[in-house]
Length: 215
Image (cartoon, rainbow, N blue to C red; front, side, top):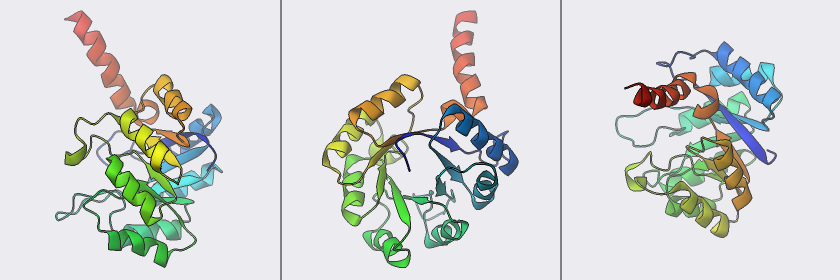
C-alpha cells in the first residue's frame, strides 16, 4: 500500500447504493481521482472491485453478533473468507473486547497476510502495535463506548509518536484539509469513505445547512 488517499467503497444493505456493481464503479471513480487503495466490505464487493481496478484492497466483513461489541471482521470466519478472496490487507476490529489470544491467532494461521487493526483509543492502538499488526487504523474513534468524546487528531498524534508500525488515519476525516493534515502529522495514509462514496450522507450535510437558513 502506497502512501496517500485510500477510498472506502462501502454501502450497507439498507443504503441506496448497496450493490457490488455500484461499488465496482465507485472504485473506478476513486482510481480516476487519484486513490492509492480501496477499502471494501464483503467478498461480493471485493470480487467486483478486483475486476475493475488494480489497486491494493483493505478488506473487511461487517457482521454483528449478539454477544460481541466488535462487528468488523470480528471472528475467524470472516478472516478466512477475506483471506480466500485474496485481499492485500485484512482489517480486523482490535478494540479491547477482542482478546489477545484471538488477535495473535491471526498471525499464526496466516503468517504471510497483512493485517490492519481497527481501533478506537490510543491504548488499543498501542496494544495492536505490540501484538504485531502491520497497520494501525483510527477507524473506530467515537464509535465505541470507551472512545466517546475523544479527539481523533490527539489519538492520531500519540499513535504516530509511539507505534512502530504505520498508522492509517480513518474515521471522519471528511474534508480535504483534514485528510492533508493527517498526512502532514505523519500518518502513513488516510481513508475517506462517507465524504466520497455515500451520497445520502453528503446530501444530508448540505440539506441540514441549507434548511437551517431556509427556516
